[in-house]
Structure formats: structure tokens, C-alpha cells
Length: 91
Image (cartoon, rainbow, N blue to C red; front, side, top):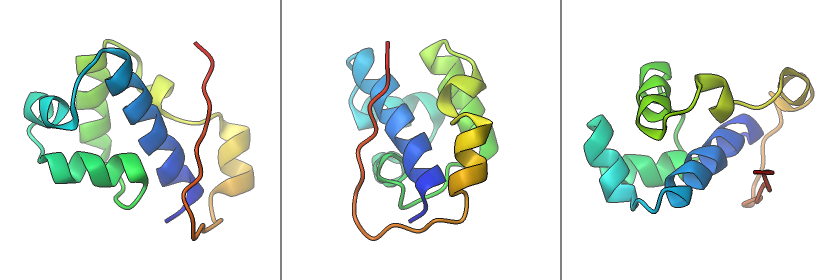
């Protein structure tokens, strides 16, 4: 897993939970499986760019809302992690 995938996954989970959807509900809305959503949220799977657009559309947000700030990417893009890290986002 890498930190960038984990960050995006945590953002997807944050938005999904903020509207009260299950992973299954999100998966149905964008044409993916629940397992794929679970893997994206945990950082085990990279979300394809077109799916990130689909996710942003159903959440009513901008694609950039799902992505980390560029400084974060510069510092962490090649870092690998062996354990789960939880990010906290401000409303």
C-alpha cells in the first residue's frame, strides 16, 4: 500500500459515510463491486481516474476534494506502509 492510495481511500470513505451510504450503495451508483470499494477505501487498490470522477459526481463534490494537496503528494508519493493509517479531515 502507498500513502497516496490510502489518503484517497480515506477521503472516499469519509464522503460515503457523511451521506450515510454503505459500500454496496456506492458501488451500485458507480458500477463497481462492494469489494472494489472496500479495497479502494483501505488503500489496497488504486481507484481508476474515471471512477474517481464518478465518485465525485455522486458525492456532489469536486475531484480535487478526493485528492491530497500537492505538497502532501511531493513528500509521500513513494512511501510504502505496512499498517493501516487513519487520516482526519476537517469539515
